[in-house]
Image 1 (cartoon, rainbow over the protein chains, first blue to last red):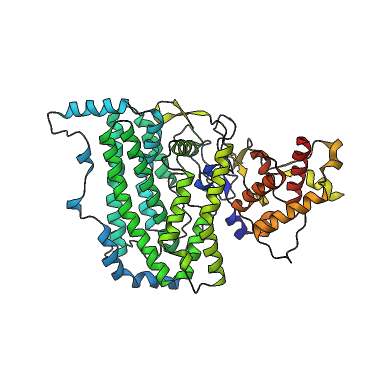
Image 2 (cartoon, rainbow over the protein chains, first blue to last red; image 1 turned 120 degrees about the vertical axis):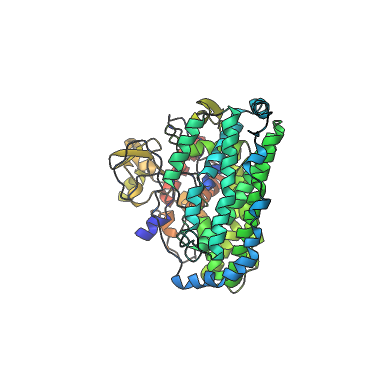
Length: 396
Length: 137
């Protein structure tokens, strides 16, 4: 029974908390964005105040990788030093948030702020909803560093471990840290958003954490991060493009710079998984199929602002409508990774491995087909208030 | 005939139903797959006078079975009864949606979201199809 329970995905209801008809559904693009999972949970819960943030409802599986495979990662440490750490940028060569923000030491500081706010005035609310959601996601970095350190064989055992994997984890975190800082300062200065509500959302989100269902298993973990880095690259690339369209070239530069970091990280993670396909094709293809069956859940899917029980769904709906991150992107990323890792050409797989190979290779077109149907039937979505923009309404 | 009345009982949580755990509403529930403890209630077929009409036509059940077989790539030996749950046949949530899409194409009908969540067996699918086809006529 426990096995079957693991296999159940409960989809969140797509009704906004004030009971309008469902915004998204089984057949909508959001199906694959494995958003908030909520249901009557059988897991033991401590008594909490009502209407709190959502919780993961799947049973949390741990250490699913057979312990003997930890050896694989130990033996990869030298390879990682030569091939993965090279994708980190030396700190002296790195951009810092201050490079893109008004300079407090300059006489022109207040003018620079004024200009920033003038440009931001021209940018619509729906864009800010998406930018805020992205910023909140970035600011939940403690969760992601934690997640990397849950992975067997590659975790940072002491917080200062000298292994290549640990060096990567810390340096990756350090690079990512600048993203949240930069977006935070920009949003603070722009005057278009309610910082206190945003800060509250961040506090809730870090408190909630997330379980991407990687089960302490670095195969699953690195497949997940490969997918995610590409997703953030696409997403920030789109916010950059939209900022430019709205006439804010500085904001476009901010988003574009963040996107290029994500691209570099994607390169590193996909290289790790490529190596795993070389060393253990059967295990890796099984892991790939497993993650795709479970669906790649978005890092901020448990987001909550103290007001909206369906905050993540609403945010994703706007991101979908603006073309910042869509179900089509999900399918495209999957297709890209299948090609990048040459999954179609794998040979010598077990029977289970071949099934996994077939599943993964056929999945993108199935998703696209579903998405076409959903778009064809999409009904007019409601407008929803976001506390992040002082309860102003935005079209989902 | 016990089978007939059984098929009129729709399982699956209503989208509007608040879900409680430890006396606290943690959200609303809508299960993709009606299974085990996810159900919070059954909704008996209210149309008692139509109890007999709840039984779908055999040809419909047959066509549905074919579509399910094809979607799930079942071996010819696999036993299919009208009551078999798709999940028992190895269907994941994606398969279930594609089965419903296949049924829409085959029967030229449109299945509303609320209804599609209640399709978990061949019988349920066939019942809904006949109902929708009748409505069209």
